[in-house]
Image (cartoon, rainbow, N blue to C red):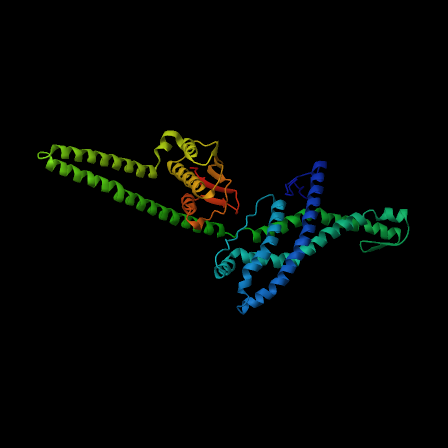
Length: 428
C-alpha cells in the first residue's frame, strides 16, 4: 500500500486509500510532474554551464584562467539560485545561499571564490543535474503520456479499427489492444510514484546547494569574531575620547581653579579686591569645568534616555534638528541601556549628517521593534551620494551596530533620496 501524499507533496502512512487521499495523491503526482519537467530546463542550462566552464577549468590549470573565476561564479550562481527556489517550493522549507561575500581586489575575489565550499558544491550539482535532470524530465512526461494513451487503447480500436502506434505499441487487433491496458496501468503505477522521485531529486539538490555542515557555524564564528574586534576597537576609541576630553578640558579647568584659589589665598591679606576677583574667576572656571564634565558624561550615556526613554530622547533629537523632521515610533518600549545608547547616537549622528551634508528639505526618523530587533531608519530628500569612506560618520554608525551584532544598510543614489536602516538585536 502506497502512503498518500499530503497537499505539500510529503507522505504520511495510511491503512486505507480514501477518495480524499486519492485526490491528494493525484495532486502530488501533478506537482511532481511539474517539478521534474521543470528540471529538464535547468538540466539543459546546467549542462551548457558545464561545457562553458570546461575551458575556464583548463585555463586555470595553467594559471591564466584564474581572473575568470569570479566572472564564472557570477554566471553560475544565478542558475543555482533558480534551482534553490525550486527546491524550496518542493520541500516547503528554505534553502539559504551559503556564499561568502566576493569583494575587494581581483586576487582576493579569486581566492574567496575558490576557497568557498559552496563553489565546489555548485559544480557538483551542475554535473549531477546536467546528467540526470533531463532524463528524469523525459521519464516523468513519458510515463504519464504512455499511461494516458495506452489504457484507453481498446476504445481507440473499437472506434477506429485501423492499425496505429500508441506509445511504441502497435495496436492492430483486439489482442494487442488488450495488451495495451495492463501496460498502461504499469506506466500509471510508475507515474503514481513520481512524487517519490521528485522528492528524492529535491533532497539531493538541497544536500548540495544548502550550506555544508559546519560552514554556517564557521562563518558565524568568523562574523562574531569580527564583530567582537570591532566592538573592542570602538570601546577603545570611546575610552580614548573620554580620556582626551577629561585631560584637555575638565582636568585643565580644575587645575586652573586650584591655581586661582592658591593665588587668592596668598594675596588675600595684601589685596582683598584682587583676591575676590580671583575667587570669582575660580568660580567661573569651576562652572565651566562642571559643564564640560556633564558633556563628557552625556557622551557616555545621555541622561535624557533615563528620564524619557529612547522614544522621548529621539523625539528631542528630531525636534532640535534644523531640517524639518517627521518621527514615526511603533512598538518601542524600554531596551537594554547599551542598546538604547547606541540607537540614540546612531540617530544623532545620522541627523547630523543630514544637516551638514544632504542639503535636504525634509527628513524622517523611524523607530520600530520587530521580533526582538530594534529597527532604526533615517531618511532625507537631499542630494544623496552618501559615502562611508568620506568621513561623514557612517563608518562610526556601522561600528556601533556591528558591536551589537547588528546590521547597517545604506541606500543613497546620486540625486537622492537617502535612507539609512540600522537593526540592533535587543532580545535577551
